[in-house]
Image (cartoon, rainbow, N blue to C red; front, side, top):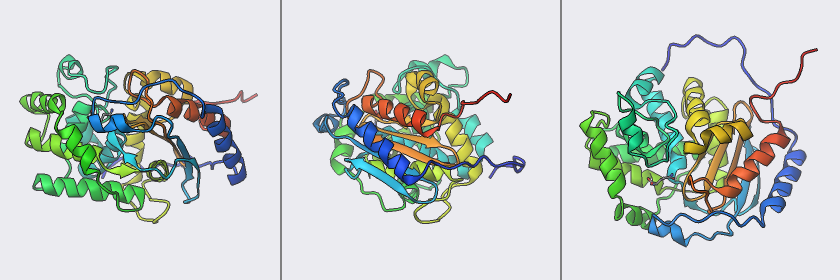
Length: 328
Ligand SMILES: NC(=O)CC[C@H](N)C(=O)O
């Protein structure tokens, strides 16, 4: 959708051989299995029931190979990890310039549900990876009604995963019944002209999108789709354009872990996105994706083991985007 010039050189590179990845994923699992810090989210009542021991890791490449250990097949609600993928659908539909103008693409440095973040900027945008900007993003999903937008979100995220994603009615009801803060944010944004449909409908579709069920394996495939120019490595289907992928990854790099995004980039050196159910997806452009599921969170709402495992694998798989070596 964008008129950016075609790139002369494409950054490729591949992940190490399957055996090497397998050994490292097993080693990461063994090393962090006994980690007990962090707390399971309980502000959404249904999330408080998650098993703090659940722990799964999956690494997927852009050719459709995946390596998984532990509870990588256990379903959980996607929560905020949905945000970059819904943004990808909107960015693809509107084009990157209009998407940026209407939603903002700057890190807030503030918690994911911050109201202050909206007030601080003159144009009242935040970015698509915190609640305010994510509700605004969902309001821009093409569709004439809330029902159509919800269908487009569900189908779009399913195309990223390469299979039809189920919906967790219990998680949805639980969040919908205690959703005053997100509803308030949506109304505030609507007052500033920064939610682009009925604010209650936007919040409802957003809450539904957060209640789609994924596994760590699904997240790895979704991440590998963003790593591979928007083509799903399992189905071979194009989901979004390569140009959209690079925009989405840029926002993930600067804002994917809320107020810890700088620390994350400093340690891991890759675009990532966390969610309060305990998932983190990390993308290595051109190569693949690392996904972790482990419910206990730090104070910012990021999976503790997810961060430790991803840092471990980024360092050992040579994924950090900022690595260089002396030329002479
Ligand atoms: N950080 C998150 O995962 C937040 C998602 C959650 N549905 C909320 O809106 O509060």
